[in-house]
Picture (tube, rainbow, N blue to C red):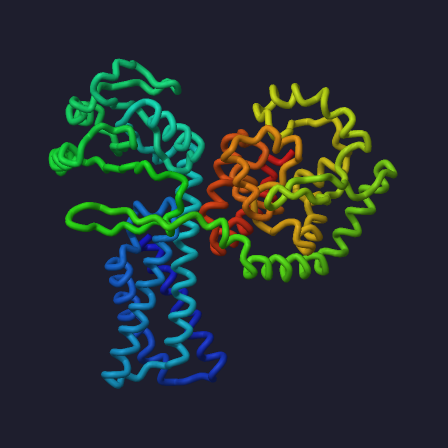
Length: 460
């Protein structure tokens, strides 16, 4: 990261110099003092990034904290440099200064984004993995193991479990071997030498025992991660405020109400209206292709369940034969065997799909008419997937909370695996979205949607 940052700042300085000369005219004295000033500014900038934890490797794999630290360091560097230049009456081109501190942060953020993508891709392919010993009862260990197994980019491999005293199990339901009890944790860690000790919510260690364990691990090359009992809660809803040595966790209430405010609706109306106009030639071409395939209707209309359980007419480009609904019942059992989702019907190689329909589904082009649903107020650009009435009849009590907000054209589950996800994972992701809604999360989901559509992974 440091070497890449140096390269980014060199590029930023050269670009700022050329922009200043091109826009404001050539200045002969700029070249003479530019490079000395640029070197000093860059060194101070790098020091600021170090002080603001911009090189913490623990923050690289995920989360916005690393990017925030770099931005804070950049603002601090710009403020300090500007103050020194002003107070010391140092001659420095204001145009160069402004361009440098606009281009530099953008390149530094892009650098970390690229490094994150590279690291996570390499880890997903089996490299740079870290061995983990999970401490806690096997039910919690299995829950953590499922998430780690699904999110391979984290780079964690659970090599064993350490259970509370009295648990005589030899392996978890997922086959994770039990290495011993918590009383033998230190000797197990010394023998196995994992990279990470992960304490789950099922750990029986008291605060005093946990503190003593941490003391004994002080000189060991192992990291400790604690998984709290609070799960499926975004970081911006949680605030840690230590009081008298107690790490009190303050949690904001769920945000379903925020997701139905006028600001989100205004963005939906403006964006869907603009997209319908811009994509009108593409919509016309798709309509012609669907019509010419078998002479059937262009638009497929279906009743779906929206906000507060109200039904609405859901629009898609037709991708199946005209009698697809009539033969659905006999295919449901086969779909369950094919993918394991007994609530939401999806199956690979569905024989009802037409030839142009396969292409439309692969790149989600059949979803474009839903922009009209968004404009009309039935749906949102981002939200839980709109369900069929028959699917809702099979909902658990928790799953009905998906109807607290407008359903979306895209959503968290669509960009996290789409049709390859189980029904339990689909509900879990949708509930996470409803409870932790934010405008930033919507923007991130829309950006990830473009990548998911381009890869066509899980689309069928």
